[in-house]
Image (cartoon, rainbow, N blue to C red):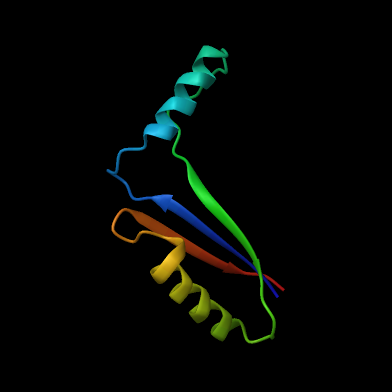
Length: 80
């Protein structure tokens, strides 16, 4: 089974890397860029077929390792 975990900064948390990317895009004359927020994506392959157990395990992984829950949000998506 495949899963994707997306980790992003919470609203209100400064994102200097996103600001740098925003500035670079504007300097390249990429039209319409108003703001950029950067994050992390983890594509994870899991054994087994129990989606509920997989989601619970990945939430635990996020809480303990993949995300800094003080400043980051995370989303877990389970595929087939």
